[in-house]
Amino acid sequence: MLHDDRAAWVVDPGDAQPVLQALEAHGLRLMGILVTHHHPDHTAGVAQLRDATGASVFGPQREAMPEPLCRLSQDETVDVLGLQFHVIEVPGHTSGHIAYYCEAMDGAPLLFCGDTLFSGGCGRLFEGTPAQMLASLEKLAALPGETRVCCTHEYTLSNLKFAVAVEPDNAALSAYQRHCQTLRAQGTPTLPSTIAQERAINPFLRSDVATVANSARRFDAEQAASQGVFATLRAWKNQF
Image (cartoon, rainbow, N blue to C red; front, side, top):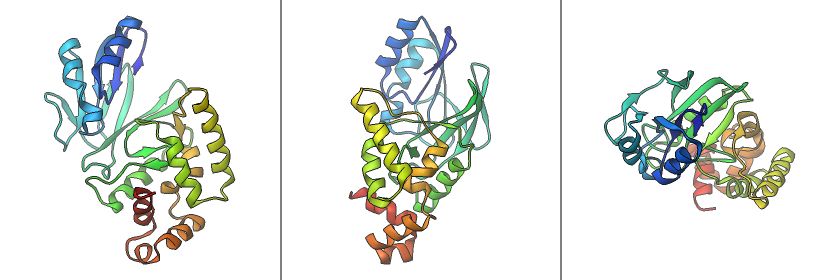
């Protein structure tokens, strides 16, 4: 949720009730809903919230979404509480997945990336191809390093177990894993991460790094040769 103490926007409300409770608790009016892709855990609360509040809904151009909504594609913008969020098309997890990027909010860029990029991982390829997902992740990795990464699931510790299997000698990864374990032990989220952090520890942003490529080849040399390192990493993670 983003708010200015009066108006609020939410991203990917899979359940309306926590949003309604937060609005009431803080005395906020819901003005808008941003949706990254069509999966129910990101959209199931949309209709109830829209009916209860009259909020405007924004979502991807090419996916089945709860109507009515304003459909968005690459390079379009949404005004959210006076801030401009730019749409980035990031197919892979789903065919029409989009992300929302603000160049400056409270002194740093902010990214809502849905299920495309996770801390230490990336989304499964339910509809897109490995090539599409790799291109999408490269778009996000090219954003400024200080960009805060607001993904939609707290999968970090699970993802980092896999990342360590891929790069056991990555000192930055080991330190980040310890940091995240401490946060979770305290009941604190690991998110948001940053693009700089993900470049340093996330194997799916590091498929061109020799240590990552060598691990992928050890896992499945034939697949790495025929389909590429990224596809091999995703297949490995699927069964990890």
